[in-house]
Image 1 (cartoon, rainbow, N blue to C red):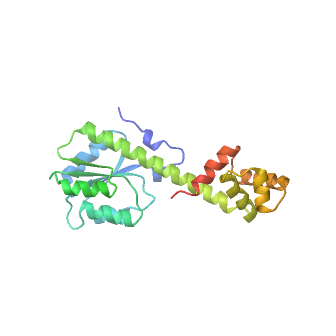
Image 2: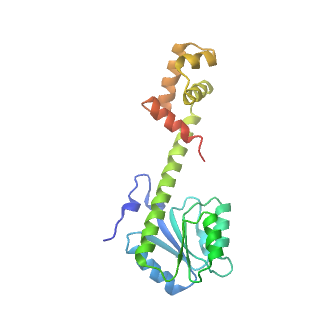
Image 3: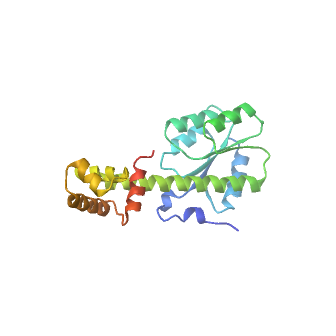
Length: 216
């Protein structure tokens, strides 16, 4: 039975919902893959060439890419390299009919999610698609959380940032006061302001949010 769980994340609007981007130069293959993927409740967008896809995609795209290895002009591997250079991190599932072991190794080393040979079992492909989309949803949620944390951090005063940094290092209020040359009471006031501006209610939550600032 089709499932729409992949489009239900609260932070996604209709324009940004996950899409399986099918890139294959054979029309019959694109149609067959589209019907198969949409039977799983996932949206699709089909492209006849790597350039068509590049003209469409951006770092904001969500979902995954179902990519033919042997595309004309810009091959699947070359497209993967271009996407990496552009900072587009959509999970890539390669499809190939040639059993090219060196190409599969290179693709996986460059971060491909999977490399599946034709003919393939529908259950296997759909399973890997579900996993790839779920991975991308987690990635975008993490990105959203970090962007929110960065915006909150930008609203802190310099002294509040210093108190936050001390907190993340595990300093007590007494240690923080000594390090910054202010009173224990003043540290508590600044920390309260930091928690309010960072939208956190506990010290543990504050530290977890602050750690997001240190990740890529």
